[in-house]
Amino acid sequence: MPQPSGGRRPSPVPRASAATPKPIPAPKRPSRMRRTGRAAARTLVTLLSVIALVVTGYAYARLDQLHDALETTDALDEWGYSSEGDDELPPAPPEEDDATDILLVGSDARTDMQGNPLPLDVLRALRTESTENLNTDTMIILRIPHDGSDPVGVSIPRDTWVDVPSGGKDKINSVYGTAKNKAWGRLQSEGVTDRAQLERESNQAGRRALVRTLQDFTRVHIDHYAEVNLLGFYMLTESIGGVEVCLNAPTQDKDSGADFEAGVQTVSGGDALSFVRQRKNLPNGDLDRIVRQHTFLTSALKKTLSTGTLTDQQKLSDLIETVRKSLVLDPDLDVLGFAQQAHELVGGGVEFKTIPVEQVAARSDDGQSIVTVDLEEVRSFIRGLARGGGQGDQGGGQGGGQADERPTGGGSAPQGGGAAVQGVGVPAQAPAQVPCVN
Image 1 (cartoon, one colour):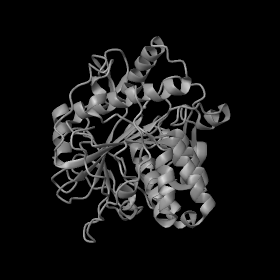
Image 2 (image 1 turned 90 degrees about the vertical axis):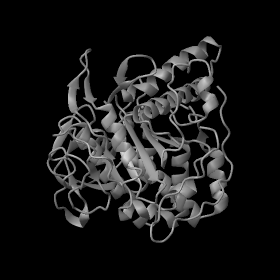
Image 3 (image 1 turned 30 degrees about the horizontal axis):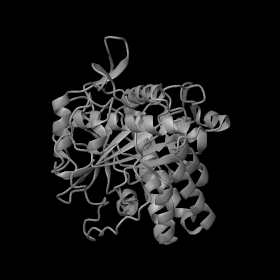
Image 4 (image 1 turned 30 degrees about the vertical axis):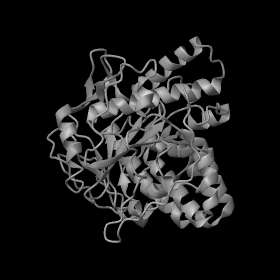
């Protein structure tokens, strides 16, 4: 499977007006186009925003260096879908759907983005040393409406029960890994033996399958793709000296490694991963986990912008290395153009929502705990986000498109476009405006 080339300097992107600043991706192409890793894809937004600030305040030549080193993906290229093994992927929806849509993915890969295996001590710190399958446990579609409305980040719960390319139904977080494993076997049968090459090329197949599955599920045309792995999350939180969070109650969970007291505390590295991975022993399971991730993003970004990181050349170099090892983009996503508006995240310009769901802990025929949805309700909700100022079409299901958190860092309860799940995202008061969550 050919690797698309990266490393070209992006064209400057015009800033939005002062009245309605928006993150702006590079122009669309005319015709082209991850049980353990539960790290937040919201950290991907943080990484992109930090790097954009790095390169604008450091040196534009450094941006060239970063783009030269970044791994890119052909997941959005139409020609990629005709390759062997991809015939079962559903067709893409129409490209013009009233918004630019960026798929943000968090994966639990046990390699860096160049396909090199992580050392055992790092895997232990990430708590992934005993896992085998790759999952995409955090998926967000960032919708940027063409009518100038505020961008909205739409979370897709990891256990959402969907039609999958391999046939039948499965959890959406299994799609990437299943396609990756299939491609790995095919590549080996073709004589490929280099492990890094096997990793890179099979990952490309996983990304293509995930993109097409999400497009078929939401009827949203994915215009851009960005993926961050656990390594980047770990390195980022370590490099900024931890992130301040607040919990309504003490909690423990053996699977994620979570062991936290109530109240305000600072987490980094493995503890930060546990904080955003935990979903067991939470009142609302995966939905509470999503809210945690949303609030974590805000705190992490504020910490990064207020600790002198962006004026320290060594810290800047460390951050660039973090991104190089942990980030993959489609080659047409302009990092600078997308992330120059990082203040929008801090100022509350991006609202995070979760798709409307019917049941949070339903059971599949084979006994899996799944999240069920009304497909048409999900599609209607997401369509509405491109034309309703972030409100979405009203949904009646449990968690029906509720606004989980507008990341202002304040303590206000979330406002929503649908029925909210009781207790989800309603923060208590905490010092320094750190919102407390479940």
